[in-house]
Amino acid sequence: MKTLYREFISATLLILGISICIGFLLANIVYVVFTKDEITKQNVEVAEQIVLNLEEMHKYGDTFQPFLDSIARLGYQIYLTNQANEHYYFGEPFEYSELPEPIKTQVLNGESYMGKEGVWEQFWMMGHFSNDITNTIGLPLQIEHETYALFVKPDSKTLFSDFHMMLAGFIIAIALVSLIGVIIMTKQLIRPISELSEATKAITNEDFTYSLGIHRKDELGQLAENFTLMQQQLKHNDVARKSFISNVSHDFQSPLMNIQGYADLLLSSKLEEKERLQYARIVSDEAKRLSNLTKQLLLITSLDQSGYPVKKSVIRLDQQIKESIRKHQWSVQERNLTISYKLDEASLLSDPELLAIVWDNLITNAIKYNQPDGQIFISCTNDEASIIIRIEDTGIGLSEESAEQVFDRFYRVDTTRKKDGTGLGLSIVKEIVTLLNGTITLESELGKGTTFTIILLKEGNDH
Image (cartoon, rainbow, N blue to C red):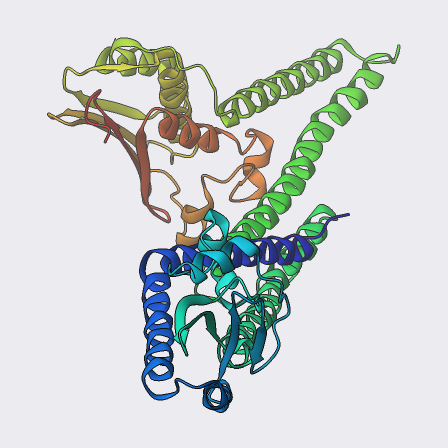
């Protein structure tokens, strides 16, 4: 398996190699455009000075050789030939010492020779430093009325020690430093990625306690922070999921056990008619409770889906709330409660079916947990940006701790509420209001009552 570490090192080496090639190519371009002519000009000046000295001061054959020897010791390679095909070499020997006959004839005929003239020889600067007799400057020379051809170039060993070693050392140093730096940097980059990989494996095994030791200020540090937030959220979701399953199992088990127990009693032949009716009523109530729980679970599961289809239409909220109040009028009278309302005319583009569930749940809560002879007041205020609905009751109220958890699924304040509630009603209300781009808050005081406030933004004011 390819590791990120190996891929990163390979990519870096490839980039380094390409960079060296491009750098070498650019150096050759600079050499051809700016440097080559200048170097050739300097070598021509040296060769012309040697020819001038030989022609004016060393006209005799017994004196020009010591002079050329002294010039060679200064760092030059010299080749001298004449029409009689006599050859003289001064200084370090040439690696390639065979001079083509046309070049020699050209110089002996009085023309100058400016070194390698081919396209590639001009382009590659390393050719300038090759120890080849053709890589010289050739000038005609007159000694004792005899024509010679003088070929001169700087000593290749001197040039190599000054330039090639520096260039080679520079390239090797860059390569080594770059490679070591990349290895160290790659290890620093791979370590947090490996740690994140281990943390991911832990999450796969439902272990949400894996602690990341990544403290960076870059993108990897940000990734680690986001991963930690995700880990905490997954832990919370896992706890919520297990709690949800436990609560659902418990809430299903209780009515099912009641239905089974009373159904068994109904099978008894010795049962009196009055008891039979009582047990049948209990079975019916528990079946209704189970049916209600199932409907609420289906609804809250649907609301959890991100693509829940909201069917919007223009509705009159004041009329819808009045209709919901009329549906619960018998419960209000049964508990001897007083319900009043002040509803502004308010139209809203929203989902009427979901909003009906909201009013039904909140009014049911206000009735169910109100005190004897208590009151309920409902108001609807219409302004330019939103519609505000308040449902107040004079019921038993909630403690501060309970008020913070009342929208949690299956949360019930005390055991007395388990008999006639599922703990899902207010959670469903919260989900619906949020889905419809609204907010819901509550204010409550233990023993004095509770006020729910719903704010629904009008279409076009939801940014």
